[in-house]
Length: 309
Image 1 (cartoon, rainbow, N blue to C red):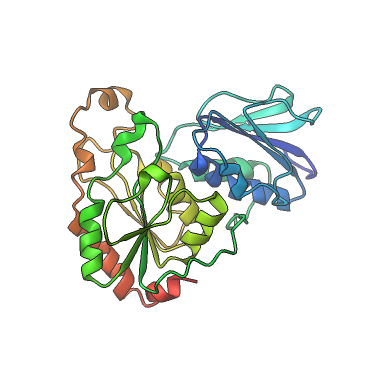
Image 2: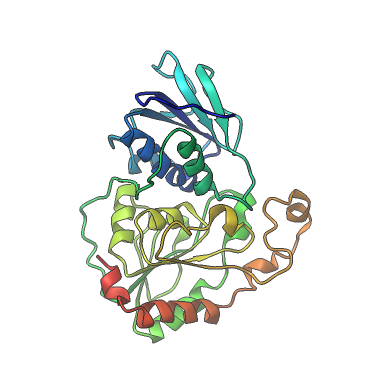
């Protein structure tokens, strides 16, 4: 659909889809914020998400008027436009125009799709989204590495979880790093040298990520939280597509992915369903991740101390 968006002051519904997670929401927020700064009013709609409290990361920020969870009925009589996620066709039924995102990751990532939609509505500049961050001080050691070893409770996504975190911790400890982990209670790394900071409200998790020296994770919602905070980070991809979800919008992000002909199988339903050995989870060694981390921590002129601001 071609838009002729001559005036601002419009109402826009962002329907983020059924099954929307923290990462999906965070990738949309720069577009939401950009349209708000042009004088538009934006509402968010989310449904079918696994984790409660994810909207607390943004609730109350001025660029989002209302957030509707598990409903597509709002106080708005009619929206000027509704932006519909690629996740599903869930949408408000009172918009004058609809703009549907596609799954063409070869051209644009999920983040890029939302920015492109906002560009069609007049947005030109996409800034780091303002988020709700706790003032809690975790007192992390200077050479600190924070790990999120999970991604979601859904069995469907189990193959997103890299399997060598304990080996990586051993290597990091030998380097003199202090290692912490975050996420839900069942994502604690069972290692005597790891300090667990799990099961925190999202605002406190944001503060924890903000204070660490380096963040390491799978493809997860917290990976996108670190990217939104512009933290130095290493993102480990196994089966899912870095072209779709890679945190490349964060200039401080590094991505590691399998060197396999079948990568990524996400998006290829037949390949995904037929795969039984999930060799992508083991193909990236702890040494390879460790080598990248050493480069970031010791050869980056800023160092970990400069990253822990």
